[in-house]
Amino acid sequence: MGDVTVVLGIGAAVLLISVIAVRVSIRLGLPSLLLYLGIGVLLGESVLGINFDDADLTQSLGIAALVLILTEGGLTTRWSAVKSSLRLGIALSTVAVAVSVAVTATALHFLLGLDWRMALLWGAVLSSTDAAAVFSVLRSLGVGPRLTGALELESGLNDAPVYIAVVLLASSDAISWTAPLLVLYELGAGALIGVALGFLGGAGLRRAALPSTGLYPLATVAVCVMAYTAGDLAHASGFLATYVAALVLGNARLPHRADTLSFAEGLGWLAQIGLFVLLGLYASPSRLLDVLVPALIAGVVVTFVARPLSVLLASLPFKVPWREQAFLSWSGLRGAVPIVFALIPLIQGVEGARELVDAVFVLVIVLTVVQGTTLPFLARRLGLVRTGEAQEVQVDSSPLDELGAELLQVHILRGSKLHGVYMTELRLPVGATVSLVVRGGKSFTPQPTTRLNTDDQLLIVTTEEARDAAERRIRAVDRAGRYARWKGETGD
Image 1 (cartoon, rainbow, N blue to C red):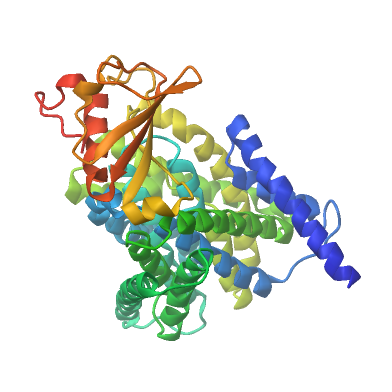
Image 2: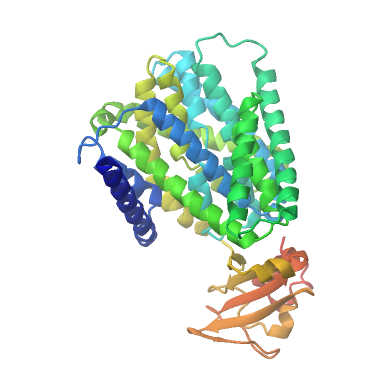
């Protein structure tokens, strides 16, 4: 009984510290995952003395956490925001992955003297972007929906092919000519299972008369986790099944949708915190210095050669401007996923796998500091930050669900051409209206003669049908002012 009490107390303390760390990381401009990793390292063998080196348990818990992170990512991704980026997102999660693996493996084979199989393992592990890092960083940047949607889709979809590649390469069996067919089956079957369970789960939840509001979020998450299990049992991609099922459910008319998304967001945070603290606890700082040089060499190859080249080739058919290509190249954020995937060859007993795990850990820290802290600056320098992006506001109110209404918040930043526009000139579509303006800390109901100012915050009530049109109109006026339509600006 005493051990349970101690474990619960330590767990609660770590969770509270990690929650506070989110605010600290925002003030310091650092990704919060670094602080979580730091907490884990402090708890580990080198500082407080907790000795934890169970690779099997770490990988199992890591995969469980990734399933929950993908669930949160899929549920909170709006299809209307990413559908225009679907082909680019798929290309980044398939073509870009293949190119990145090939380029990285070739470079490391010659630079580090790795045999081809181990070099390909390094390339595969390092080719996956991290969903948790991407979702947490990109959604606060204010970058347009095309780029954000493509990167979110990439991070949600590329875990599946990378996981398959790592499992194949870590196996002692020879890789046969049927391997590409196996990959196609696993991805295709995983996507179909995700779509099927997403639609069936949504239909079932709409028809269910559950006795408590709190049961709907639990049931929604359970459907997504079930998609992973169904995919795995069918020898398909469970990760892809999970993300697709969550994406379908998140865009369905779910009962108590706001409650469900809030619950999923909290669960996603819990999974991220637990995963990064666990990985920090598993890491051995005394071994990291030994792999510092190969890790930095791999980081230079991945960041400045493999990622830009893979983005260039994947985006070639879509005529992506060079500024957006540069941003996509620098946005290949790594996090827990490469570390969890690197544990697979270690568990399989592959020679040199321990060095791979340690090198990936070093690389994740370095790239997170370098890329995570400079990404907002790069987005501004490339002129990709948009001021007129509406953010969804989650309100725990069942009447909104019953009325089919949603709340959007718009912050008018300096440089936005929304400044000076009269309310009558905003011309939101039928079904959307500005219900509240917050100016200088005071709120009021706007009148037709109300003129918008820089730093105003608008609360917009809109029907589900009018939401997309309202967002496009806000973006159009933000870019082109009151005469946006005359100038041909659509806000897309």
